[in-house]
Length: 345
Image 1 (cartoon, one colour):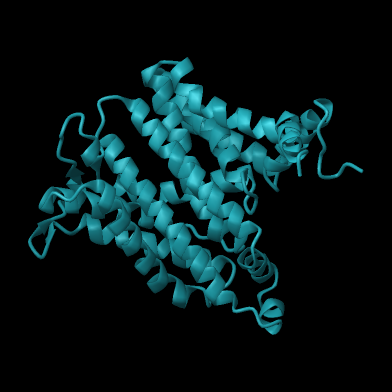
Image 2 (cartoon, helix red, strand yellow; image 1 turned 90 degrees about the vertical axis):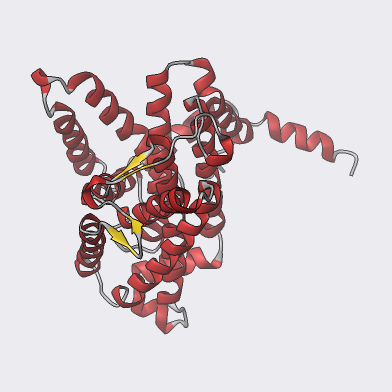
């Protein structure tokens, strides 16, 4: 028993432990070291997309289906918190939770009938759902006296530096909030991935009939995964609304956002714990930086061409995602530093 403190200290000296801690410290210190508004904004967007893709991964990765309508849940979160704030003065900190609950209810309404479909039919149905929600929002000026403003969108009321109302004078606050949300999502994903629910989801995704023959209620497991996915996607939607202080249907509910979420997760490695995060860290900075510096009249649209080329190359040469390569490099580094990889011995 006396040796246990020493054992704990030796564990912390192992790269198996200190490398992940070091990576977390780097993420925390990132905006403090590189104090640039543009850099912090890009970093926030990287973490925001990582939240979206990690949320998508609950159902699109672990459950093995291909949802292409997650922008609808982001839109529900953004519009709910903004409308509650505009009309009743409810702080978005609470509004984001209300939006998350509404997104879960929408996910259940959508998921119960659509999970009876398989393969491309489920993907097509999810596309139809997000388009229906977007079109309804675009063509609705008001509902029960509440102004939705259709295509014009909504401006979040400005309060200055007001933490109580999820508004801050500096971007760095948003960085740490979205980092905390991402850590929470990844932690829950880790717990699920190593639980019975995670095994049931994988089994149902690989062969639903075989899993059901073993007594697994695959539909129920998928609905749980979809509910978690919708809740955190809506949370990310509220965060985006407070970050930009303006939302409109084509910006937060568009199909291209749904496709982007799926592409980033797939390229990073769907069904893996950190694959969606890796995908966001690779693709988002390239897309944002090229858009900022190469989107003038001379290079109009070149950022989209670069983004598309990266996706094509990744799909051709890394169809299972980049996570496999990163895992390989990571464990090689661990071995060189004197740690133990999972395949050792």
